Image (cartoon, rainbow, N blue to C red; front, top):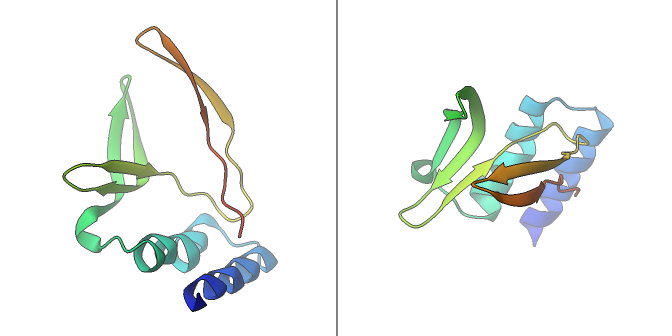
Amino acid sequence: MREINDLFKASAKLKLHDANEAETRKKLIDKIIEDLLGWNDDDISYEERVSEDGKTTYADYIIRTADISILIEAKRIGKTFVIIQRDFIGVSTTIIDQAIYL
């Protein structure tokens, strides 16, 4: 429970100082992924190159185990994601990404 309270405090400080993405990652997102959720360095890739549809970009975090892959796109505190309409192999899906507000 203390870890969660510490994250709430860190979140409030980041909002107060209008922190950028790098600060948000270091002071909040890294702590959530590693300390709260328990992922370790062996499972996490940072700023990994990702190519899709002939376009190259970088994923902020990719967490991999033998059974799962999770891609995380980080944003600075207070920045939200948009709704994206994608078409995969004839199946239309809507991906809704939302920031987690602490």
